[in-house]
Amino acid sequence: RKEVEQDPGPFNVPEGATVAFNCTYSNSASQSFFWYRQDCRKEPKLLMSVYSSGNEDGRFTAQLNRASQYISLLIRDSKLSDSATYLCVVNPGGNLIFGKGTKLSVKP
Amino acid sequence: GAVVSQHPSWVICKSGTSVKIECRSLDFQATTMFWYRQFPKQSLMLMATSNEGSKATYEQGVEKDKFLINHASLTLSTLTVTSAHPEDSSFYICSARGADPFSYNEQFFGPGTRLTVL
Image (spheres, rainbow over the protein chains, first blue to last red):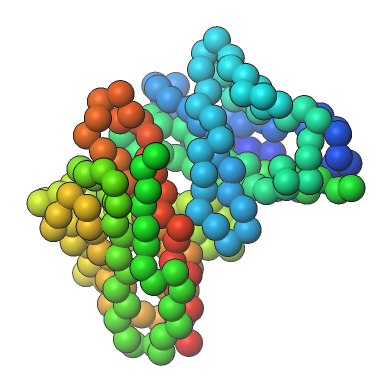
């Protein structure tokens, strides 16, 4: 089983749609979790950390289920500028482990 | 916020030459720097971790004699790809982490260096 596994995508959605990304991780001892956004040919940028209680930042909501080792990201009212690859990232203790990412394309 | 720069942003070289990539933390002291490589449509793969003043720790499968890492100061780490070959063509990204315990889990990424070996 891969350390961090994500929906392969691509997700093609119209503007205004709600889209959800899923991610599973294999190391049950993982302590911290993140969603990063990566634009084409650019470095990844931190979108948000993910907490056990769930957290929201504007149109973005992240959830963590430690029992299922599952992380999700929900984007509401998607914008054209949300088009990017979303990386699920897990820190099992020291280093970051990146998923392959899910590509999102928001169309007018 | 914490800023990390990389230089050069892109480089094209002939097979057999060596290429040096610099990673600098501009407004904080980076006790630890990480070097990643990303092939097209693949995830970022950690190559090595370096702590200032000590030898880098390489991930399994990464040749330390081919990818030389130097982290001589708290603001600069360099990656030298020695005797580069076409299969080394990739996107190399560094990240840096400070000593602040409150942000210990956070890594700040450089903009990356795109290496093309002909």
